[in-house]
Image (cartoon, rainbow over all chains, first blue to last red; front, side):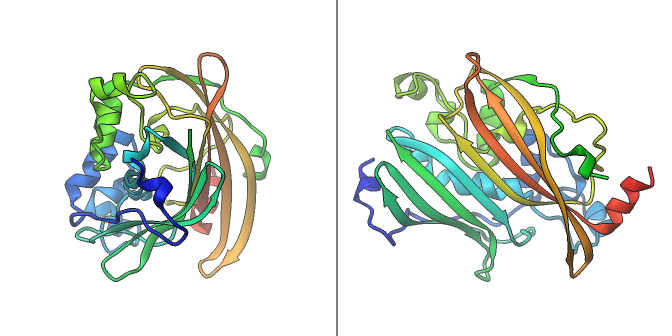
Length: 133
Length: 150
């Protein structure tokens, strides 16, 4: 729990490599989020939309990325979470989640965050401002 | 056509941060941290109860904006921002509504793209804002023509 305050600029939170993306992951997210856009779950619909196959919900990846901070809720919370959706996530992609401390200002910690695929290409990236109590 | 929607708001809708929904959501993003799903951990935490992950408002109903007809296919989610004054607590009632903040068009590789910016709001039982969320939706030319021809 003290790890956050010991972080220096340029340090990272422990990165996480997700298991390869499965259709079931996306079906579960569709059900849990209520986002039933079929390009995320049904091959034919994805192909009709001009995609090579189904793609993950951008919000699934954004949801996953926030877990880098889940151990820290006793000392603070995510005040701002800003994401730009940059690239598509396909089935079997292996996504790595990362957060690097970019700046500290009083009780606010500014992180650059990103989820990248197995080729090192960013699927999403942005910023987290974590505010401690 | 989307220009006319700028400034329009939905009717507020009451949403409950429901325990089962939070658990299902946390599991679906691979984040079953006890602060979200274990009652005892929640009780002993500084919040006195479980909280919801920051992207949980994806679940909420923000109401519909009259005269704004968006297709449910073919839209691209460009950007998303959440701003919190505090985390969402399991069991609380959040009143949600959305507003069209902006609309603009830009020429891109795939023709003229439309950019529709929403601001979503969530307020608690005291009327205090718990979170706001910006959402940028990109609409391609084909979809815009479909909407216009309606």
